[in-house]
Amino acid sequence: MGRRNDHSREEIQLLAIQAAEKIVTEQGWRALSTRKVAKEIGYTVGSLYLVFENLDDLIMQVNGRTLDELYAVVADIAINQKDAETCLCALGQAYLTFATENTQRWLMIFEYSRQADPVLPTWYYPKIAQLFSLVASRLKPLLPVSNLPQLTNATHALWGSVHGICILALTEKLAVVGTNSVQELLETLIHTYLAGLRNL
Image (cartoon, rainbow, N blue to C red; front, side, top):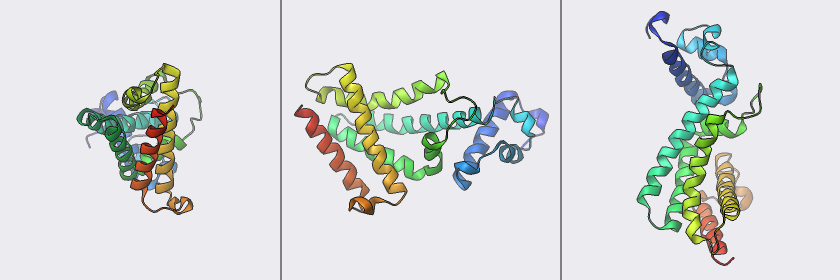
């Protein structure tokens, strides 16, 4: 790493985000602090507050990058899978794989509660929306009568169910529901859910 005055504001911000990702991955998201990030990049805590509003801001930036990475993975699958049901199963498996490979960063998206301001920043919502849009675009042709409220509810219900299975898998609680195969559980969920939609 270069001397402190070698880095621009944008470079310091990126260094801090990368350091935060490293800390979260290695120590868990609850271990993240501005002090640890500052130490990791060789700057003072005060320097961090010149490029981030607070710890909430830093964590939101990290979460935003995680969502972007997840979207890149699932968008590639959506492009290459033409059949809606096959695509949704593949998206579910990809979501599980991403959560498994990036567990702490993934958990931080859902478990961290903003301290200074509970309202999410405006730039964050499109990152969430684009993920839901991939699922919605595959569900839409399967609905007998498609309207936006119904499509939105169907999308959120399916995602919430897949997310719940992922949580059970990552916390090693699958035995509670009487199965050890998370892949089979995901496929059963998606196939059964889609069959129900077709019969509405």
